[in-house]
Image (cartoon, rainbow, N blue to C red; front, side, top):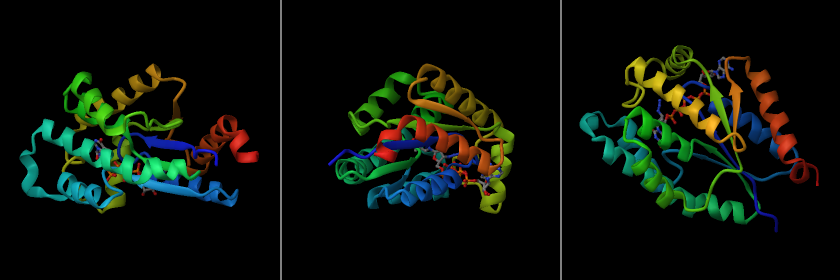
Amino acid sequence: MARGIFISFEGSEGGGKSTQIALLESALQERGITVRRTREPGGTLLGERLRDLLQHTPELEDLCDEAELLLFGASRAQLVREVIRPALESGTWVIADRFLDSTTVYQGIGRGLGAGSVDAVNAVAVGTSRPDVTFLLDLDAATGHARARAASGDRPDRIENQPPSFFERIRAGYLDLAAANPDRIVLIDASRPVAAVADAIWKECERRFSHELHG
Ligand code: Z5A
Protein backbone atom coordinates (compact mmCIF):
# COMPACT_ATOMS: atom_id res chain seq x y z
CA MET A 1 0.00 0.00 0.00
CA ALA A 2 1.40 3.43 -0.99
CA ARG A 3 1.94 5.88 1.83
CA GLY A 4 -0.54 8.79 1.98
CA ILE A 5 0.45 12.38 1.18
CA PHE A 6 0.89 14.82 4.07
CA ILE A 7 -0.30 18.40 3.38
CA SER A 8 -0.21 21.21 5.93
CA PHE A 9 -1.82 24.64 5.88
CA GLU A 10 -0.25 27.59 7.66
CA GLY A 11 -0.70 31.32 8.06
CA SER A 12 -1.97 33.99 10.40
CA GLU A 13 -5.50 34.09 11.76
CA GLY A 14 -8.30 34.62 9.26
CA GLY A 15 -6.22 33.57 6.25
CA GLY A 16 -8.82 31.04 5.14
CA LYS A 17 -7.17 27.78 6.20
CA SER A 18 -10.38 26.07 7.37
CA THR A 19 -12.23 27.21 4.23
CA GLN A 20 -9.55 25.94 1.85
CA ILE A 21 -8.97 22.69 3.74
CA ALA A 22 -12.68 21.83 3.40
CA LEU A 23 -12.55 22.51 -0.37
CA LEU A 24 -9.37 20.49 -0.87
CA GLU A 25 -10.76 17.62 1.17
CA SER A 26 -13.88 17.51 -1.06
CA ALA A 27 -11.81 17.68 -4.25
CA LEU A 28 -9.63 14.78 -3.10
CA GLN A 29 -12.60 12.70 -1.95
CA GLU A 30 -14.26 13.18 -5.35
CA ARG A 31 -11.21 11.42 -6.79
CA GLY A 32 -11.62 8.50 -4.41
CA ILE A 33 -8.87 9.55 -1.98
CA THR A 34 -9.39 8.93 1.73
CA VAL A 35 -8.58 12.07 3.72
CA ARG A 36 -7.97 12.67 7.41
CA ARG A 37 -8.12 16.28 8.63
CA THR A 38 -6.31 17.40 11.76
CA ARG A 39 -6.14 20.66 13.64
CA GLU A 40 -3.64 22.03 16.13
CA PRO A 41 -3.69 22.36 18.92
CA GLY A 42 -6.16 19.49 19.09
CA GLY A 43 -7.10 16.35 17.21
CA THR A 44 -6.70 13.92 20.12
CA LEU A 45 -8.19 13.83 23.61
CA LEU A 46 -4.98 15.32 25.02
CA GLY A 47 -4.77 17.87 22.21
CA GLU A 48 -8.35 19.08 22.64
CA ARG A 49 -7.82 19.48 26.41
CA LEU A 50 -4.63 21.43 25.71
CA ARG A 51 -6.47 23.56 23.12
CA ASP A 52 -8.98 24.51 25.77
CA LEU A 53 -6.18 25.42 28.18
CA LEU A 54 -4.11 27.30 25.61
CA GLN A 55 -6.90 29.30 23.99
CA HIS A 56 -9.99 29.40 26.17
CA THR A 57 -8.89 29.53 29.81
CA PRO A 58 -8.88 33.19 30.89
CA GLU A 59 -7.25 32.27 34.24
CA LEU A 60 -4.13 31.25 32.27
CA GLU A 61 -3.44 34.79 31.11
CA ASP A 62 0.01 34.59 32.78
CA LEU A 63 1.02 31.31 31.10
CA CYS A 64 4.75 31.75 30.46
CA ASP A 65 6.04 31.52 26.90
CA GLU A 66 8.18 28.46 27.62
CA ALA A 67 5.22 26.51 29.04
CA GLU A 68 3.15 27.55 26.02
CA LEU A 69 5.85 26.17 23.70
CA LEU A 70 5.92 22.83 25.52
CA LEU A 71 2.12 22.51 25.54
CA PHE A 72 1.91 23.04 21.76
CA GLY A 73 4.71 20.48 21.45
CA ALA A 74 2.87 17.97 23.64
CA SER A 75 -0.31 18.33 21.57
CA ARG A 76 1.67 17.72 18.36
CA ALA A 77 3.65 14.76 19.71
CA GLN A 78 0.43 12.94 20.58
CA LEU A 79 -1.26 13.85 17.28
CA VAL A 80 1.69 12.61 15.20
CA ARG A 81 1.79 9.21 16.90
CA GLU A 82 -1.92 8.64 17.47
CA VAL A 83 -3.33 10.01 14.21
CA ILE A 84 -0.93 11.28 11.53
CA ARG A 85 1.55 8.41 11.24
CA PRO A 86 -1.06 5.61 11.30
CA ALA A 87 -3.17 7.47 8.71
CA LEU A 88 -0.25 8.01 6.31
CA GLU A 89 0.92 4.42 6.74
CA SER A 90 -2.56 3.16 5.77
CA GLY A 91 -2.54 5.23 2.55
CA THR A 92 -4.80 8.00 3.87
CA TRP A 93 -3.91 11.57 2.91
CA VAL A 94 -3.56 13.92 5.89
CA ILE A 95 -4.49 17.62 5.71
CA ALA A 96 -3.22 19.46 8.77
CA ASP A 97 -4.67 22.79 9.90
CA ARG A 98 -1.34 24.03 11.31
CA PHE A 99 1.74 21.92 12.07
CA LEU A 100 5.29 22.55 13.15
CA ASP A 101 5.72 25.85 11.25
CA SER A 102 3.12 27.42 13.56
CA THR A 103 5.40 26.80 16.54
CA THR A 104 8.47 28.02 14.63
CA VAL A 105 6.69 31.29 13.87
CA TYR A 106 4.30 31.95 16.80
CA GLN A 107 6.57 30.82 19.64
CA GLY A 108 9.97 31.30 17.97
CA ILE A 109 9.32 34.72 16.45
CA GLY A 110 6.03 35.99 17.90
CA ARG A 111 6.98 35.15 21.48
CA GLY A 112 10.68 35.68 20.76
CA LEU A 113 11.86 32.30 22.09
CA GLY A 114 14.27 31.87 19.17
CA ALA A 115 15.02 29.02 16.82
CA GLY A 116 17.14 26.89 19.17
CA SER A 117 14.54 25.88 21.74
CA VAL A 118 11.68 25.83 19.23
CA ASP A 119 13.54 23.55 16.80
CA ALA A 120 14.42 21.22 19.68
CA VAL A 121 10.77 20.91 20.80
CA ASN A 122 9.58 20.48 17.20
CA ALA A 123 12.16 17.73 16.62
CA VAL A 124 10.96 15.77 19.67
CA ALA A 125 7.31 16.29 18.71
CA VAL A 126 7.43 15.28 15.05
CA GLY A 127 10.61 13.23 14.55
CA THR A 128 10.83 12.46 10.85
CA SER A 129 7.13 13.16 10.12
CA ARG A 130 7.26 16.27 7.93
CA PRO A 131 4.67 17.56 5.43
CA ASP A 132 5.19 16.77 1.74
CA VAL A 133 3.90 20.26 0.96
CA THR A 134 2.79 23.27 3.02
CA PHE A 135 0.40 25.92 1.74
CA LEU A 136 1.09 29.28 3.36
CA LEU A 137 -2.04 31.44 3.08
CA ASP A 138 -0.57 34.92 3.16
CA LEU A 139 -2.73 37.90 4.06
CA ASP A 140 -2.02 41.28 5.60
CA ALA A 141 -2.51 41.19 9.35
CA ALA A 142 -5.32 43.76 9.50
CA THR A 143 -7.49 41.96 6.92
CA GLY A 144 -6.86 38.60 8.59
CA HIS A 145 -7.77 40.01 11.98
CA ALA A 146 -10.99 41.57 10.63
CA ARG A 147 -11.99 38.28 8.94
CA ALA A 148 -11.27 36.26 12.08
CA ARG A 149 -13.21 38.69 14.30
CA ALA A 150 -16.19 38.65 11.96
CA ALA A 151 -16.15 34.84 11.93
CA SER A 152 -15.88 34.43 15.71
CA GLY A 153 -18.45 37.08 16.66
CA ASP A 154 -15.70 39.41 17.93
CA ARG A 155 -14.64 37.19 20.85
CA PRO A 156 -10.84 36.90 20.60
CA ASP A 157 -9.16 34.00 22.43
CA ARG A 158 -5.95 34.28 24.50
CA ILE A 159 -3.65 34.27 21.45
CA GLU A 160 -5.88 36.33 19.16
CA ASN A 161 -5.84 38.98 21.88
CA GLN A 162 -2.22 39.93 21.09
CA PRO A 163 -1.49 43.45 19.75
CA PRO A 164 -1.27 44.16 15.97
CA SER A 165 2.57 44.22 16.14
CA PHE A 166 2.50 40.53 17.18
CA PHE A 167 0.59 39.57 14.02
CA GLU A 168 2.86 41.69 11.85
CA ARG A 169 5.83 39.70 13.23
CA ILE A 170 3.92 36.49 12.51
CA ARG A 171 3.33 37.41 8.88
CA ALA A 172 6.96 38.44 8.36
CA GLY A 173 8.13 35.27 10.11
CA TYR A 174 6.07 33.08 7.80
CA LEU A 175 7.35 34.90 4.70
CA ASP A 176 10.96 34.38 5.84
CA LEU A 177 10.25 30.70 6.50
CA ALA A 178 8.76 30.30 3.01
CA ALA A 179 11.81 31.94 1.45
CA ALA A 180 14.06 29.53 3.37
CA ASN A 181 12.03 26.44 2.34
CA PRO A 182 11.03 27.08 -1.28
CA ASP A 183 10.65 23.39 -2.17
CA ARG A 184 8.18 22.59 0.60
CA ILE A 185 6.32 25.83 1.31
CA VAL A 186 4.03 27.22 -1.41
CA LEU A 187 3.15 30.88 -0.91
CA ILE A 188 -0.52 31.56 -1.71
CA ASP A 189 -1.99 35.06 -2.00
CA ALA A 190 -5.00 34.68 0.32
CA SER A 191 -6.42 38.14 -0.39
CA ARG A 192 -8.12 36.79 -3.54
CA PRO A 193 -11.66 35.36 -3.65
CA VAL A 194 -12.15 31.87 -2.16
CA ALA A 195 -12.45 30.18 -5.58
CA ALA A 196 -9.23 31.74 -6.91
CA VAL A 197 -7.29 30.63 -3.81
CA ALA A 198 -8.73 27.11 -4.12
CA ASP A 199 -7.76 26.99 -7.79
CA ALA A 200 -4.14 27.92 -7.01
CA ILE A 201 -3.95 25.22 -4.34
CA TRP A 202 -5.47 22.56 -6.59
CA LYS A 203 -3.13 23.40 -9.51
CA GLU A 204 -0.15 22.97 -7.21
CA CYS A 205 -1.49 19.62 -5.96
CA GLU A 206 -1.92 18.43 -9.54
CA ARG A 207 1.61 19.56 -10.39
CA ARG A 208 3.20 17.84 -7.39
CA PHE A 209 1.04 14.74 -7.03
CA SER A 210 -0.18 13.95 -10.56
CA HIS A 211 0.98 10.33 -10.21
CA GLU A 212 -0.95 9.82 -6.94
CA LEU A 213 -4.02 11.68 -8.28
CA HIS A 214 -4.21 10.08 -11.71
CA GLY A 215 -2.44 6.74 -11.21
N1 Z5A B 1 -0.69 28.40 17.66
C1 Z5A B 1 0.56 28.68 18.18
O1 Z5A B 1 0.79 29.75 18.74
N2 Z5A B 1 1.52 27.72 18.09
C2 Z5A B 1 1.32 26.51 17.52
O2 Z5A B 1 2.23 25.68 17.47
C3 Z5A B 1 -0.01 26.24 16.98
C4 Z5A B 1 -0.97 27.21 17.07
C5 Z5A B 1 -0.31 24.93 16.35
C6 Z5A B 1 -4.95 28.34 16.85
O3 Z5A B 1 -5.95 29.04 16.27
C7 Z5A B 1 -4.08 29.39 17.53
O4 Z5A B 1 -2.95 28.75 18.13
C8 Z5A B 1 -3.54 30.37 16.53
C9 Z5A B 1 -2.06 30.10 16.46
C10 Z5A B 1 -1.76 29.42 17.74
N3 Z5A B 1 -3.78 31.68 17.05
N4 Z5A B 1 -3.85 32.72 16.42
N5 Z5A B 1 -4.03 33.75 16.06
P1 Z5A B 1 -7.29 28.49 15.70
O5 Z5A B 1 -7.11 27.09 15.24
O6 Z5A B 1 -8.38 28.75 16.68
O7 Z5A B 1 -7.51 29.52 14.54
P2 Z5A B 1 -6.59 29.93 13.35
O8 Z5A B 1 -5.72 28.79 12.96
O9 Z5A B 1 -5.88 31.19 13.69
O10 Z5A B 1 -7.60 30.10 12.18
P3 Z5A B 1 -8.85 31.02 12.02
O11 Z5A B 1 -8.71 32.39 12.58
O12 Z5A B 1 -10.01 30.22 12.50
O13 Z5A B 1 -8.86 31.29 10.50
P4 Z5A B 1 -8.68 30.38 9.22
O14 Z5A B 1 -9.03 28.93 9.46
O15 Z5A B 1 -7.36 30.66 8.63
O16 Z5A B 1 -9.79 31.01 8.26
P5 Z5A B 1 -11.29 30.56 7.95
O17 Z5A B 1 -11.99 30.16 9.21
O18 Z5A B 1 -11.33 29.68 6.81
O19 Z5A B 1 -11.84 31.98 7.48
C11 Z5A B 1 -12.03 33.05 8.38
C12 Z5A B 1 -13.18 33.93 7.84
O20 Z5A B 1 -12.78 34.52 6.60
C13 Z5A B 1 -14.46 33.15 7.55
O21 Z5A B 1 -15.57 33.96 7.85
C14 Z5A B 1 -14.38 32.88 6.05
O22 Z5A B 1 -15.65 32.74 5.47
C15 Z5A B 1 -13.67 34.12 5.56
N6 Z5A B 1 -12.84 33.87 4.37
C16 Z5A B 1 -12.09 32.78 4.11
N7 Z5A B 1 -11.46 32.91 2.92
C17 Z5A B 1 -11.83 34.11 2.43
C18 Z5A B 1 -11.50 34.81 1.22
N8 Z5A B 1 -10.66 34.30 0.30
N9 Z5A B 1 -12.03 36.02 1.04
C19 Z5A B 1 -12.87 36.57 1.98
N10 Z5A B 1 -13.24 35.96 3.13
C20 Z5A B 1 -12.71 34.74 3.35
